[in-house]
Image 1 (tube, rainbow, N blue to C red):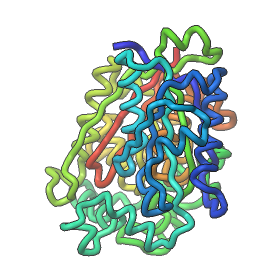
Image 2 (image 1 turned 30 degrees about the vertical axis):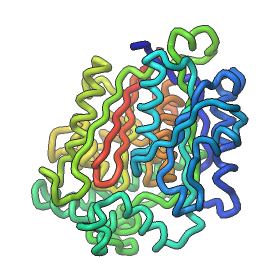
Image 3 (image 1 turned 90 degrees about the horizontal axis):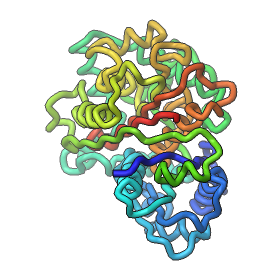
Length: 387
């Protein structure tokens, strides 16, 4: 298998853009990513496109050919990948495999979602399709209520971490202030989080990720090919793992450990030949504040039940032991579902290149992305190293 590197990145600002179409988002982010390589679009041999709900949200399916047409890529093969909120990570993994196998030398991976033109009820129903319809969505369970049950179970097993959950939101909002692409550039306090509009106990609106429009693209190339044209620091994909778990919460072995994350991380660390202590920064899937705490434990950054105190001690802050979601995360940068996993990669590559401006970390050589779909029924973990 050949080594694969990221040679181009591009994204839109995340936010509410009622007058901006799917095509507009694809064109902006995709054009930026290709231009970032220094190559022309004719160098792209295939397109892997991530999207969750194009049909119900926008009436548009078959997004692979749509994106290829918008970006002027000609008659290249395209594929759309869907894995709920992990769609971006899955599309990326498929693209890495295609280049590593020798099938292609240069490919484009993109993700897009447009959601904010719909009512809250319509968006909630669309996202709920990523759960078990018969046992969850069909009887009124939504993801806020499902993850609220997870939070309460975590309280039962490890103690009440309500303040530390609020700190997750505060920290990610603080990080987003330095990210010009972030949707929510607003400083908040622990008390604001705890006293916000109630959603599902213990969550308030500040514990939940955002409804967002946006797109993100990356260009991958075989590393030996990339060395001939890439003027920037090469960012090699050194590890990539994928695992699954039951779709329904009731069928999981544990509500406070996401088995798919544990297994995908184990695969990625083994492939990369690194341990959690060697990761300089991570972008993790903080769809809810409790999820970030659980993720930090499942990824091996902290012992089980200790993720909350690590946040309280500043270990996940930008100047901490393992800077986490320095982009602002899903909580503050935004969560345009099909683009989310790729936007995580955008941030890691930006940091590893030393191009993050005001939010640039002092040490950024090895970074990790963690992308889950549904109630952690699908997980992709990827590890990157600057060369």
